[in-house]
Length: 274
Image (cartoon, rainbow, N blue to C red; front, side, top):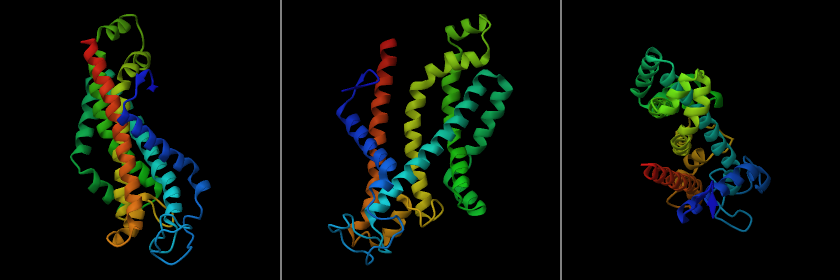
């Protein structure tokens, strides 16, 4: 089996299967869920049965239904935040590389300032002050994760702008936008795509951690992090508490397997060029 012209390894195939299953759950979850995400359907902490495959949670809600509903929220929000962080980080990184020294210095010092603050503590402070609105959550985490993306995009672009074909484009009189779009971006895509996968994984875990602390997605809306918090008190006594944590772990493993495969392809490509 091949993807994008490259042979897929067994580990990458497993990762793609995990990602595909989770993506289908996110897209089709509400249609597949046998019950509503906030619907109380029986006694709290009921064991798995034919009617409730994963059992019931602390309020008597169907765990399988809440996992399917939570997939859309958790995965969709992670994709949105990661996309925002890449838009901000890549735009600023490329600007720092092509617009000259003072722009580079200003953006780099701003990035250093952001990095000097622990990201999790910063998010906790902002969400505690501004509230746990979803928009605030997206903007806060997107801004925090745009900083490491900026540093990667700047480093990659700095290497590319010194190459001969970029100098040739400048001598031909091509504008900066043309150079960024036609020369820098295509050559920077492999490491940026790998970073996107890793950053999505970090975002996924970050949101789950915030929800676990009660500062992420708010009830009655389901997401996997808040489900771990709600059922964690019975994790030693009921398997019900394990399922949302397993979903988080499997999604993280799947993404890492695919990212590792992509990075290995990229590394071999550089080795062949050398």
